[in-house]
Length: 224
Image 1 (tube, rainbow, N blue to C red):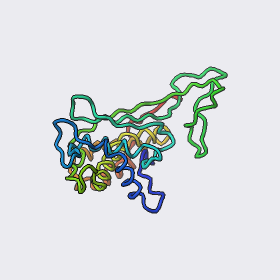
Image 2 (cartoon, rainbow, N blue to C red):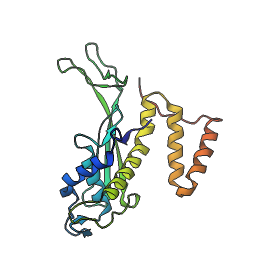
Image 3 (tube, rainbow, N blue to C red):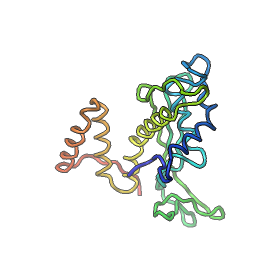
Image 4 (tube, helix red, strand yellow):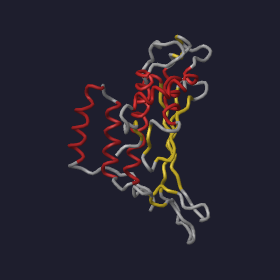
């Protein structure tokens, strides 16, 4: 299961994203005091947020799991941190009275579609917020053409943000779909990987997966 991903459904998705970047070049313009080259920011956070904003504008280059209603990424004011916020369609935490509707199943079978506007509805959402520091993002390079961001740099920044967002979102999606054992294992994997170097990640994954088959840990649950 995955929360957000790059849409590679056409023949040349990167060419499509490159065209989008040219239309969104203003979002990459260097702000006062930022490192820059050719008028384009070399600030990793600014660059990543601009790459995200350009990717989710219509038609989107980044796609969402049906349960993901919205996902945004903003630069936290006066800090060197980005804040990713993801809104999920979630089951109610209280009993819904008769005559009210909750989330309806869409064509994919997920309960994430709002009822018609002429019906009373009680729609519950879960908002996840995760800070992303600049040291977890790639550093952009000098633009090949003045005034235009490099496609490779924007793609790398976008992929880094997607990885950070999925790390947070996927365990909750697994819980919402009733797979609490896999969700708990996923959380343990991410915690342990954060403590290790990249080269050790595979060994950590194998060790935790082996342990999860022999013992049951505490589980995350939502109210029915």
